[in-house]
Image (cartoon, rainbow, N blue to C red):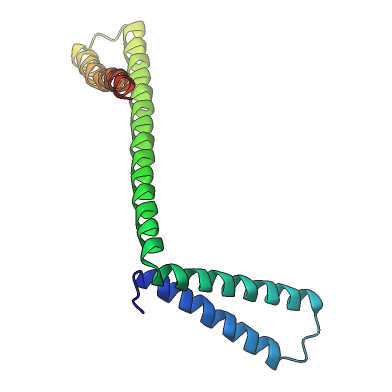
Length: 152
């Protein structure tokens, strides 16, 4: 017998050992007459046995191991896709807030009539720099949507 998925196999063996230990503890403790605790322990033991047998079987079967590897690969791709999407949304919202704050700062300086041109020009430069990023991100998002819409 060959073990194709060692991690899954040993995980199953561990669950079976936990189930055996739980059964031994249930048998050796006659003083515990709490029915709810016994039912909970028996339920937990049955789950450990079922999960352990399933994992050992999947670890010994090459076809199931290939399915597990394919599922893990698909999950990894899905998690990466979701993480990149979340990072894009967070960055876009952060830069939109920074753009709005710099617009308010420029408006306050201009409204109050502050004549210091270096502060005003500095804020204007920051505004332009910060405002470019969300613009590029929105254009890239529209372009990616058009591209993938035509591809699929």
